[in-house]
Image (cartoon, rainbow, N blue to C red; front, side, top):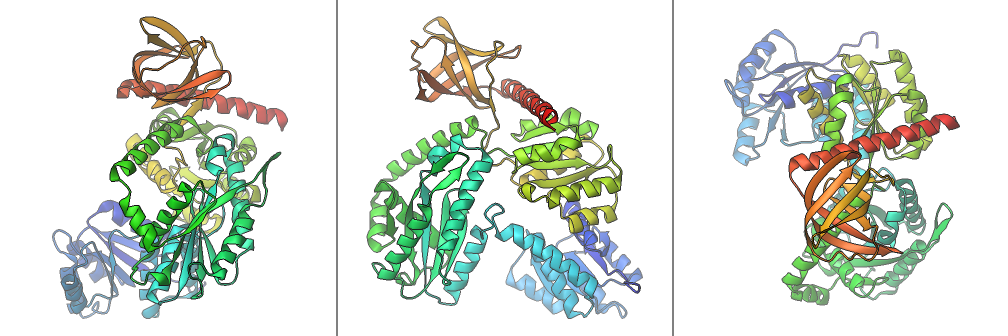
Length: 599
């Protein structure tokens, strides 16, 4: 490293955000990066600097990418510069014209970081300018990107993307295989009673049992919340064969193994849709095969579950005969059911903790994040964070490294959290106002934080936009569309209904910004009307008048719980959200006090 000289790359694009994002990525990897917004400014930089690589957009104002490339190729000292074009236009004629001018490679927009990194790596390798330092950088970054892209983080099983790649590769190579789309029966009914940690443990246990019965010709994938896919590579796997039936017995036996969650033991059965690929040689891709395996699963479910159905021409005809009106009605009811259930249970929410947040974040941004249906909280004690995260193993932690501790202390603190095997599901991000690329590199490349090294911008809107993008990329809403609050029994929190010109008081059990569950103090009341014109919510001193719709009800002896969706405007909804935001923070503060007592 004594003679190490950084490679220099020029990024040319008229989109400032894209230009900056590419620049940051390359800077973190150790490259010196210059940027230009059009071909003319880029050409001036090229004339006065030696670049190992030029990454340029094609369509730009003033001078486009083709014109820039043509001028560079005519320059006696710069004509051998490596060029990668970025373009959203993939017409063959345009690609050919660029290649004729001397472009070395193309990346089509939109692209992910992995594609760009691989293309840069390939160009530098071919030019002979990729030394050991950069080779190690590329390997580290690509491994991290591939791991997150192709594997489900909890089960560590390959996911939908890996499944698509494998199946499409088999189809292209004409390899015979069968596909089992296996759904775990009964899990949906118990999810409301499980914490996220218990749910993950349950799914992970089933995944391990399935993995244990696989033969060398089989691979298992985690495709959905309660669905696994198994690919069996064999030309002997045909409908009705002994091999097919024996594999079904193995899978069923694996899933029927008792699974413990705390003191409770669960037993599950499974249903499946099976697709034997070489019986349908006209199939072109993984999406079609997955679709028809799901159709076969539908017929298994219609037979009350526990059945493995092989997709066939008969199943195809029967499915096509189903009434479209029935399908639409079924989907409508299912969507409505999922909508209010999503609003009422927080078993699967992802908690987002901000440790010592900057003043602008604590005063405004966290509330706005909550208004966007993320479950966000303030934590002002780093000594209890480890114990808190152990309770919420799928949470996200943002650390303000400008506060309380010294920079080196924060690095050690965050590295310890990352290395804690009990916190494998926790994702960590860093917030700072300081611009420090070396520090960013340490956190991203050595400590390997998951949610980015975020250099906060001046102004509320820009900071909010950056953090919201990080949350979206990390799917931080978890499995719930709306955050939900389980309401503690309090005199100052209740609902009042007007029914047949009389007023009745109701206990609020759960509430979100779109719906709530209630029970009436008077057990003789039966709420039957679907449209409710008068509801007054009394939420810790704040009264909100709105209308509602009865979605459904369920009996939990001796009470009837009614599920009510709100018909309201944005102002009223924001009041509900503010109540939820304040109460959830209050509940967390109480939990932190309990943790401190027990430390």
